Each structure stands twice: as structure tokens, then as C-alpha cells.
Image (cartoon, rainbow, N blue to C red):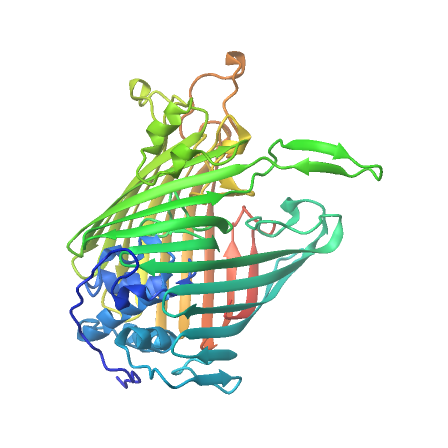
Length: 551
């Protein structure tokens, strides 16, 4: 295989010293994070399945560019074990994509020289619209462009988005990132409600006044700081915790939230993550202050908060065990009991009067020799041991278990099979402000309560920049407690007292999606495909085509 790596791999032994005001230089390398959903995480998973990096590499997302670069270096050192043509090509691609970050790790930059690349610049070898690199400062700027046509028999929905993004670092101590994207959708007019959107998975949507199009803009921006073994991030971003693609507690598919998070690496086998963030309530009663003479009423929305922490233990590099807690509360400000990263949130919620919504989860991921990964998760929303198995709404659980395989004799082939079940009323709460949501999206699983699903995925890459994707979902859903917005009536005459999986009006359906994606140039992707049975959208059966650049 032709190598384009221009950097010498330097292996050093570093003694970490943590104190007031200083730490070793390698641990001061803060950087921006790679967004949840980026293809790099699939590449890392595939390399973890072959034993090149720990299986814990992707259980906390997003990861910083520096941390990903360290994994890339580990893979490069052991690339003889890849035994896969496509993985070799992907490694070469990501060495180019993360070249500047790799360069920071191996200390090959000149401390005196400054390189400015605008329009004509090439960054080893991936091109960016603007790049400024100095000894103490890095800045990379790119546009964001995407357009997609979803075409059904009765109508066509067109969505396009444009924006900008930049990232960088200051003196290796502070990382920063900014991403703004303005979306426009047309084709489902008149747009009077969020239900008119092709997919309702966004935050704020522009005035829905019955026009022929609507818009929604998204901004994600944050600062990061790392000192010693402590990493701090403050801003707006998406999060995903746990193995596999379906995360039950912090799912990664909800809109980004404003938050402060801390990650502390405890030796080589443990790490702790803590998050405190602000959620946006939806259809939750607030306060009205006054109505002016023009008829406008000043409304103050309800406050809604999230606190969560996660502890992970690694056994060597083939087993990861995670335990997580999250709590949502509202109608008041920050609660000091939930600001303690080490507090047991379940107990703290009880001590506060049992008026908030606390959830617990545990998960495990295991490498299966050198050809796959196995994983499982358990979510506990409510637990009452005396009524287990009796359909009591005091027992609400979620489960997921799955397998992921890579290269079972064919280079570039990966496949996964998993099962997810969400009991009735999971994520809901008798106080609307405490639902486990932000805007209209679940913070956990994308699957509705009182549902289960078997999902099979296949991705085949005959070459690095060409991917064929197939997904088949077998779904079942019941109407009793089947929406997060539903809760158990207080009036005993309105409630039978039990809720089993798929109770109520039961529906079953199969959803199939087949797509082909081609990356013509780093960051420039063309895609087309067919979707059948996607009942969560306004066009269940359709085909689509589109393109994107750095989206």
C-alpha cells in the first residue's frame, strides 16, 4: 500500500505531575471535538474489533481531535494487523484529516515558522478554505453546504443548509469550535405545526405561520481546556454515552444542549464523566408576566435542567463496563445536590422529596476475538422490586443487546444486529417539565416507549470513498404509554394498574433503507437511496438524492 504519512512516530515515556498551576506538556494539548455521528467513530470501532485499540475508545462521544489522533497513531504502529485493504485506505485518509493534530503530538512543528494558507492552501493533504498555524495559535475555517431532495409519489420535499464552521486552539491549553448552519425546508406546506416537518428532530423551528417553507438554524460552539488528567468543556454540543449505535441514557440523536462537562481519567483503567446542562421544555406550562397594549403577552418558559455522570472501568483492552445516572428537574434553578459529580443522584432525588426524574443505566462491551464486538445495556427508569413482572408502571426498563462484525472474509464489509426494547411510560413523568426530553426529542433512545425493534445493518465499502448501506428494522409499538408526553393518570378510575409491553392498539411494520454514498473529494459527498416504511416522517415511502460538503 502506498504510504503518504510524512510524520515520524515518536514513542516517549512521560511522567505526569499534577499540581497547582502545572502539568506535563502532552496533557495540555486541548483541541476541539469531533461531532457525534462522524464516520471516524465507525472506523475506530472496526479497529477496536481487531484489537488495535481498546473497545472503550468510542463509549464516550464526542472525542477530542487529539485523543482520536492518539488512537490513529496506535493503529498506524500496528497497521500490519489490519489485514484489510479498505481499513488501510481509511487509515491513510484519517492520517491526512488529522495531520495537524498528529503533528502536535509528535512535536514536529517549527516553533518559529508561521504558515498561512487561504484558498490555495493544502493541509497534508486535506484542503480547507482558511488555515492559520503558528506556534501558539491554530485556526481552521470551512463552509458547510448540503442539499437533499426526498421524492415521494405525491410530493417532493427539498431541504438545504448553508453555514460556516471553524476550530482551533490557543497555546495548546484552550481548544475552541464554532459551527452555524441555517436550514430551509419546503414541500410540506402549509407549515403551521412541527408535524409538517419531514423529520421533527430539531430545536427551534422558525415561525410556523402557514408559509410555503420554514427554517431552523443550529449553532454549536464550545471551549475546551485540559490540565493533567482533567478535561473540561463548556458550550453547546451533542453527547452520546455507551457502546453500539442505540444509546439508552444519553442517546446522541437529540438536539445539542448547552452544558458544562468534566472528564477525569483515573489511572489507566477508569474514567469519570460529569455533565450539567440546560434543556428546553416543550408544551410545558410557564409563567406569563404581562400583556402589553399591542396584545403581546410576555411569557417566561419553565426552567429545565439535566445532570448526569458516568463511570467506566476497563479490563485490559477488550472489556468495558459503564454505569451511568441522569436526572431531569425543572420549575426551579440549579439544585446544589445535583452539582456534586460524586453524589448518588437516585438518593439525592429522594432526599429532595422524590419530585424529579432520575434514570440509571449500566452497559458492557466486549471484543469477540478479532472479528467483532458484543454489547448490551440496561436502563432503569423506575424500580419497585415487590411488583417486578406484574406490569406495574413502577417498573420501567429499557434494554438493548447487539453484535457488530467486521471483515468476515471480505474487505470493507461490516454488519450489525441488535435488539432494543423500551417499556411503556419510559422517559415520561407526571410533571411535563421532568420528561427526559429537550424540545420534542428524547435525550435517550430514538425508539418510542412501549416499543421494540430488531435492527440489521450492513455496510459494504468496495473502496474507501464508496459505501453501500442497507438497514432493515422490524418494529412493534403499543399505544398504552407509547409516547413520552403520556403519563399515568392520578385518578384510579382512569387507570387499570398494569402496562405490559405492546399493550393497547398494537402496530407492526418493517422499515427498509438502502443508500449509496460516494466521497468525490475529502468532505464532498454525493448520496442517493430508497426508504420504505419510515412512519416517523411525513413521507414514509420515498427515494432521495443529495450532496453535502463538510456537513
